[in-house]
Image 1: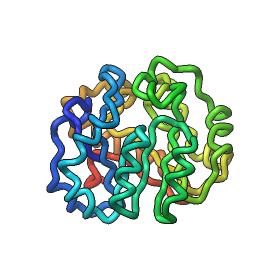
Image 2: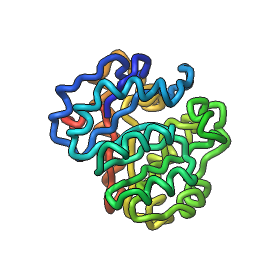
Image 3: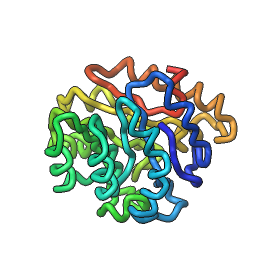
Image 4: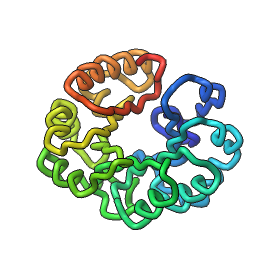
Length: 235
């Protein structure tokens, strides 16, 4: 994943087009930071950040666009095929239905987020309402679709304890939902840094810890599992 944004807590201002040649299954590109300390931006402002990089983004074999703004996924859908909508809003609404109906190559990442509206997506930590295996199971069971990838959305509207509970039970969650397509993304998340006492500035150590924990999680999972990370070369 890479962020075209100056205020991402993990890699703001470090977008490097040369990395797009690295062999991965897909590049996840975001242009708005949804970290709680940052203010939301409009769909038009987000697109202004994306637009200068379109010549390169349109050449990527499989692009994942990280946006909760439907306007921008439809702008990108008009320009290319083989597109994934990574939507951290958690709102499987008519916009999503319309997107999936546009082309049989389009895929959608459904994230679990307690924020009540798309507009409040970035305020997700104001809505830590309680997440359990039961609530996650009930949420995902409503939206099973062959081109939907389920993401428990670690770090979004979840407490420190809830994030680790989910990681410890990803295999069990898969069994309960009986869906084969999942995504796990917790690279450089604050709950990872907190548990191991690693500052964000020590990225090498943090990324190594992420890979260690990730390997333990993946050992309990099955089927098609996507991994979102800042350092694909470590996988």
